[in-house]
Image (cartoon, rainbow over all chains, first blue to last red; front, side, top):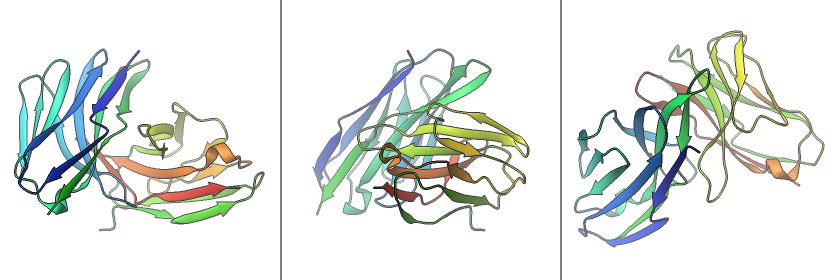
Length: 112
Length: 110
């Protein structure tokens, strides 16, 4: 069964304390992996798309990496404004087309 | 450029009532979709459309209807609301690289 699992469910960091969020997946026919940021009361906001193992993307303090089984979202020297829920989604081949499967997300809290 | 606009932001319904959640996009995207988001679960696809006049079911379609008469609009109809439909609903349109989401509708069915 196609599945996307994010860990940890919640992560509390001090400002400046670097860490990583994990997104592991089991799908057949990976077409792409997406990372989104979601602030409370708002819709998810697109961050990155990764297409193949070994690919990396960076944006400010965030860096996303991809292997054949998982993706990491590395947060370097986080600030309180990085507090949000980070969602991972995988687009895979499905019957009659493709499908997108979302993970449940990691809630990140960064304390000043 | 407003992106994806959803209305209303909040709604309380009584069991058995019907309503329509509105979604409009101004990016000329062919693909639009509706998701629901529940605590501890990933976004789940309700219905989607690949263009005007074309709709299809997603993972959790029961109790919901959609139509797509124009590229811009993709309303979601709840036929007879049930407490299990209490959730946050997101409309999204897709470009080649990812989804653009609306700000959501928080629906409570009592």
